[in-house]
Length: 168
Image (cartoon, rainbow, N blue to C red; front, side, top):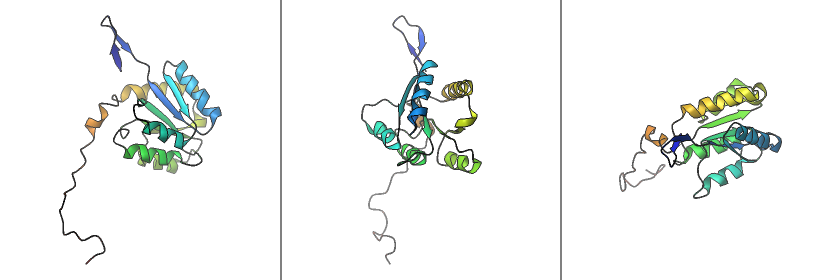
């Protein structure tokens, strides 16, 4: 995404990338590396922290989330479900990553709404940089992405017989 400077020139703004990983030994260096690549790398070390960050009013959304699949407490799949259920974050690009290389688990994460799934051990820094750049370039800005999702159907007030399920 570009922004205009005071003299009318276009300038790229740094993309904010949130790393969610229970291992500080992974999260902190990954956020630093993303900052070295010219982005604003941020990190939290639990699913609970990630969800709390997204619930803060006035907190700007990151441009991309790198989400560890397996964490104690609220794991990556639960964080993913919660973010996909919230209209504010439903279209946010979320990459699940894990040491798990099982294709069935990867397919499960994708089926739950992950944009992509990356295996930690199989990626070097250059590949990570290229993948992040490619993904950021291909995604529309977060405020524009909702136009691609159909509106939720309205519920009919007072419609139906008033009987709930299981009643005759």
